[in-house]
Length: 427
Image 1 (cartoon, rainbow, N blue to C red):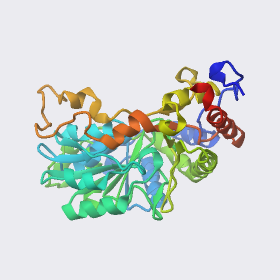
Image 2: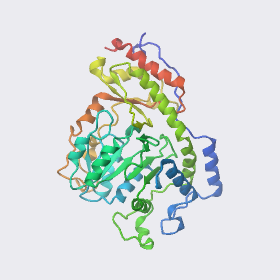
Image 3: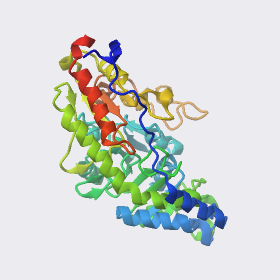
Image 4: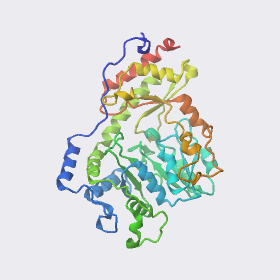
């Protein structure tokens, strides 16, 4: 069977449907807010509306019940949520925060907003959680926080990480941007550490266009996050706050419109997770027959599959990962409305975050090096496990989501199998 990359017929000639789980129920909720005319009710001063309007409060309460958290604090993005959480933990100049090389950039750059120092820790090759031996090594007397990222929707090894954090008296912030509804040993991510942060960006499981949610069971941290979210410096005096560390606030507030969408979206999460887990299993069950493709499944955690990750072994395939993925993509079509992006299969994940100029040059603000330390290096080779994953092993796809059908998934599987069964055409 001639591969499409060599001029053969494609497996599929129609576009895939775009991810969009907005329907009439969200439209009705937004219309009601618009008709009432209160699009936001936050006031940046100490008063009844300091915590926002009725939809904000409803959304936060519903989120807390869904994820078994004592407090939920809405924000306007996962990015602002991480900044808010770090501020609540009291970090500042001279402090160190342990971060991952494999995530969206804010997971590593957020400490710089408080002039604290990001310290990278390498990953375990199988779970993409922290390498526990390196985690112990990079902790110093200046370490204050560990930021854990549940990348692609796979929960990290939280028991071990929390034990290390407790041993060294450190805060743990969970970046759950890609993992709402994922569980670790039966418990939802975002409630295992001190603070959890979720994303409501338009391509996430629950989306309100832009937005985020912070969860915590700690009353003090919740209060500080609510202050930082909404102009803390203007509120502390009237509220009677005496701990003024990092009480320089922002406008990180969500609107009533976004909250109204979120209230309805939250009800759809379980169904979306069921779809993603079903489709991921279809890929795993098929692709495991090829010794050069490695999938990951776990008995002690449930995966939310923001995207699905695989590992590729070119020494077994006899071709490069890049050549294999190019051939699979040639068999398929892009997504409706995102044609210019091509078929959503990629290799390598994001480049190691310390490769970015901000770390290579150690320059974030006007004064070079402010917040960075001479003793902390960001040289290539810093995280060899993740560099190997990035440069040689990892590939991923965005074919586990709604509104894809079982038939759509079978087309993608057929493309993988067609190429995998005809590798000699690529050698």
